Image 1 (cartoon, rainbow, N blue to C red):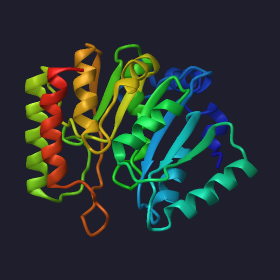
Image 2 (cartoon, helix red, strand yellow):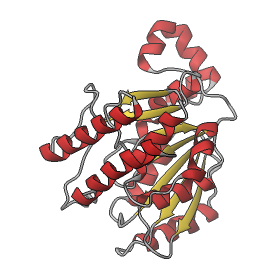
Image 3 (cartoon, helix red, strand yellow):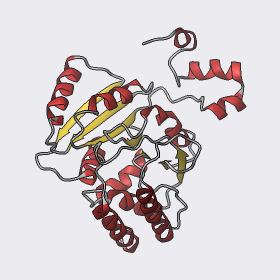
Image 4 (cartoon, rainbow, N blue to C red):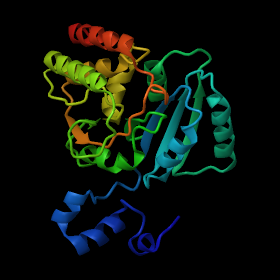
Length: 279
């Protein structure tokens, strides 16, 4: 819905919008509050691996579409068993009947469940945007933070941006201490092997320039959650410029559908060593 303020200032993140706010607020305040311009021909690719997310998938897609940036959504359905496939077929039909040039939707269906890594890898192969971002299909991560996450890349300072749940200045739901401790241990170990100083290696929000993701995705091998340390090791090996941005986090319990477990932690440990040893 167009607001009166948007009518006055123009499309958010357009040159006209930025100039109008800069004239009112000044350069310093614009920088502090994240006001900047996105190139007119820019397109963001959002890769969304999906498995058993019937209850959240429409809400997540609507939130992604609501971000005022031109996007393509690559939805990779990993052979869900809860009716998610039916919802995505409905979404696919709706997208064809009412095409939105600012939110192009592509749905890919896996015939066999392969895991998050396989879905992400398949999604990467379909992208055409200037920047590529991973979005989980639950409600743990907030798409409204896309403009903050892509800004270091738009500014020309970064090749990769990680959205960190642990930098400390954004709200997050308090949940499992041992899960947090395991995440911290894996991030620390990954940092020791990659010589990076990340605070959240396991985050979903990983954002890439076109050239960065094109150099990485054809080499990816991991089919499950090992994709996180694999991506991190390959980013470090290529000496890409990596930034972290704080993000909010609304974590969910295992009863609410959280999928990662102890087995995945051990796999991540193996991947940290494996991809430090060789690409």
